[in-house]
Amino acid sequence: MSVMFKEVTKVFGDGTVALDRFSLQFDSGEFVVLLGPSGSGKTTACRILAGLEEATSGNIEVDGRDVTDLPPRERGMSMVFQNYALYSHKSVYDNIAYPLRVRGMPKSEIAGKVAEVSRLLQIDDVLRRRPAQLSGGQAQRVAVARALVWQPQICLMDEPLSNLDAILRLQTRTELKRLHHELRTTFVFVTHDQEEAMTLGTRIAVLNQGRLVQFAVPKEIYHRPVSRFVAEFIGRPAMNTIDGRIEDGIFRAKEFSLPVPGCADGKAVLGIRPEHIVPHAAAHAGALACRLDVLELVEPDMLLFVDCGGQPLIVRCTADFPELARGAEMYLELPAERLHFFDGETGLRQP
Amino acid sequence: MSRTWWRIVALGVLAVVLVIVVTPYLWLIMTSFKSRIDALADAPVWFFTPTFEHYPKVFLDKGYLPLVLNSLIVACTSTGLSLIVGVPAAYVFARHNFLGKEDLFFFFLTTRMAPPVSVVVPMFLLFGFVGLTDTRTAVILAHSTFNLSLVVWMMRGFFADIPREVDEAAQMDGHTRAGMFVRVLLPLAAPGIAATAVLCFILSWNEFLYAFILAAFESRTLTVGIPGLVTPHGTLWGQVAAVAVVATLPIIVFTFLVQRHLVRGLTFGAVKG
Image (cartoon, rainbow over all chains, first blue to last red; front, side, top):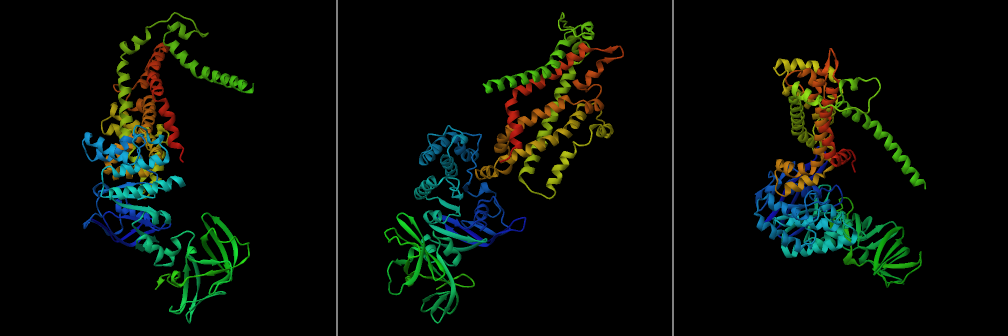
């Protein structure tokens, strides 16, 4: 089974272009994450796939079948909403059983299905309660249970974790991953949280301004971002990017220069992740001299905000790096194999 | 100390309000059991020998009993009709956008701005033209005109308070749009519908002018019946009071029955998060 977005465009009534010729294809059993900043079209893509929103143009195919004009109930998909959207007038049991009832499953089978899924999500002790009597985490599980109980082909999740507090979000994230391993259902998960995307996704689709920017496994998104946008969006703290020019194999920006053999001349952006910069407290061959501005301890790591001849850089290193005083001289080594170059105009990755 | 004092003040105020509100109603009940002499006495008579002649006299001898039925039929049907048309309309106003939506919504309110007297004469002519004068249908339709705007205005707030995602969840769970509305949204909006229904019922039950002009004979309602007791020989106060007592009973019963829903209903729609 596969899902295919073919050149899907969505223009809202007020003229906003939410999706601009968006194409994407993935297979059954994947955990696809739609990642992007707000307004990138990720939620719209998810809702169009669900059938809750109509595409202005383009097609959606599931298993080679065009589902573009099918109503939500005929698409074999379920959805978990950000605010859970539980039926407040029904008990938890009835909430979970509801999709089975609507689909006309006999009562005897329903009880078994509900018991099974509520055990899986560890909510079998709250089945008699009303949604209003649940904690945020429990309500979330009920919503997931309702979405999985009828074993849909695809389970869509629109920022399902963003209403949970930080600790619960981490726990639920792990559980979703476990659930995916056990059920092998196809998940489509919408989020603006790059960490969530990196940990959950088998593949991540990065969206920006209604377009697909990159669709790849998390490792590749992290190590080979196709553009400056993806590079800066993935990873916290964000990748250091320095605007400059390459002339005669030397990258220059303000008072900062670095030999970069083999790169084409012209405007360029150099990128390096904070965790890939190697800091030295003492002078080091080939290292850039700079001054320490601010030091933040984030055990077991340390964040160094340094000033390299007017160019601010963030360095992430282990906490055993000596705690230098503010303004102290230090040296940074930028390993050549860790550098990324992006076109100064288009922001696209240079080889 | 001061708390106790405030309590006493509050109770005092409540007592005064209670006396002001309840005395006329007690007076009405008493009058319905007074003889004509007692009812017309110059000095108010508080203690008297009750008579039970007014109730059978007016409801059986004068044939006012069918008027109760007329009132019930008119109030129930106009309430039901307004709900059937108004609730789906309110849902559309709450959920969908279309050209001129707010103008149309305001138009519903403006139907209540014209004084009923100015509308009732054309209405009388219209109903006469289609041969509906002195029918319950005419009164039901007339009452539905004002009840419909009430339903749309009240229910829009209720639907707006139900998260849009609930609609969508119901569709994902396998409902058609119609199924979603009937099976999921209506049960969720039930408290609001109950509150609205009670208000509609009360408005229709108490309405006098439309009913009086459109159906003054066979199909007249209880409220229209009361002026008939003002005779050239004087007002039959005992019988007027008896009819009034019967006319207020359903309102009181209804209000007590749905009191909780009514309070929740009226505030639920108005306060938005």
